[in-house]
Each structure stands twice: as C-alpha cells, then as structure tokens.
Amino acid sequence: MRGLRVRLWQAGLLLALLALWEWATRTGRLDPFFFSLPSAIAERVYRWFSTGEVYPHLYVTTLEMLLAFTIGTLLGVAFGIWLALAPGAAAVLDPYVKALNAIPRVVLAPIFTLWFGLGVLSKVALGVTLVFFVAFFNTYQGVKEVSPVILQNARLLGANRLHLLRHVYLPSAASWIFSSLRTSIGFAVIGAVVGEYLGSAAGLGYLIAQAEGVFDTTGVFAGMVVLMVFVLVLDALVGALERRLLVWRPQGEGGQR
Image (cartoon, rainbow, N blue to C red; front, side, top):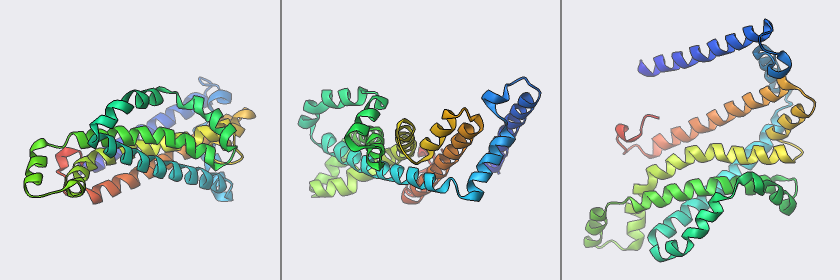
C-alpha cells in the first residue's frame, strides 16, 4: 500500500506540473515558441510511434547504449578488481586514472568522431569512457571494503586466490557493482545521445538535433520525453535484475531504492 501511495503521489505531481505548463502556455504566460504545449508534445510522440518514424532512431541509440554499457562495465569491473587486489599497480596507476577521469567527456566526442567516423563506433567509444569509471570506482571500493576477518577465516579454511575472488570478493562487491550499473545505464545513454547530437545520421540525439536546427521546440521536447522514458525503462530492468540476483541481501541494505 505504501508503494501504491508513492506511485499515486508521483503521478499526481506529474499531472499537476503538466496541467500548469499547459495552462501557462495557452494563456500566454509562457511563450509556446520556446516551451511548446504538453498536448502538442504528446501528439508528436504518438505520431512518431504510430508511424514508426522513431523506431530506427531508437534502435540505433539502443545498440550504441548496449555496446557502451557492456564494454564499459566489463572493463571497469575487471580493472577495479585487478587494482584492488594489486596495491603496487594501483599506486603506480593512481595519478593516470585520476587524470583520465578528470577529462571532460564532451571534449573527447569530436576526437572520437575524427578517429571512428560518424557511425556507431564513435558513440560507443564516448559511452565507454563514461561507463568505465563509474564501474571501476564502485568495483574497486567494493573489493577494498571486504572485511579482513572474513578473508582471514577463508584463508584458514584453505581458500586460494581464485576461491577468494569467487566466494568473497565478488559477492562482497556485488552490491557496489549493481549500484554502479544503475548509474552507468544513464551515462551510456548520455554518451550515445551526445555523440549523435554532435554528428550522426540516426539516433535520438540526431532526432533532437534536427528538430533544434529548424527551431521545432515540440520536436526537441518530444525527443527528450522519449529519451527519459527510455532511460526509466532501462533502469527498471536493471533494478529487477538486481533484486533477482541479490536476493540474499537484507532489505535495509538498499533493497528499496
């Protein structure tokens, strides 16, 4: 019942804001040229889906996002585990990791476009740079947080490095890793859309850029709505996967998000 009440409040707040926006635009308090109308935006989104116009763009963005998310997460988790278990290598590479993480990712977008062209690869490369560091830092911290007492007990029972990795380090870092996944989904989409916005021939970012180029405010907001719903659906899927794989975790430890 508590969850239902929260959902009703969320829906009510959204409807109230949309009604206020619609009223302010229709009465001239907001300029429709700059803010459009929620009803016009909803009509544009419906037209895109009913005619199938948005599906090719949605497919391209989904492909770029999935590739960036998968590659960035795998690399981040692998490097996070490696550096957490190799203090010497971590000490040597620490300034390089911090320096690379400090680079604004938007600056890299034109470089990746020059290297990989206007296709999928340049967007995937940008998304990987965003996802990698989120997965890396969460995995690194999760492995470092393993209790020394648990490690000592496991070693006394005869566990080798492979056993420790499989039965101690990975389960301990699982919550951290899944927490990073929910953030990484958004970053993977950002990488794909920003890359498309700066230069591409398809994708949600391309759709928004085209609408912006002809001062079509309704198209810009419609693209943003599709993008937000897309990210919310992906986040819900990752959350469901997290709850299924981490059934052993107590609810108070982050089961409610």
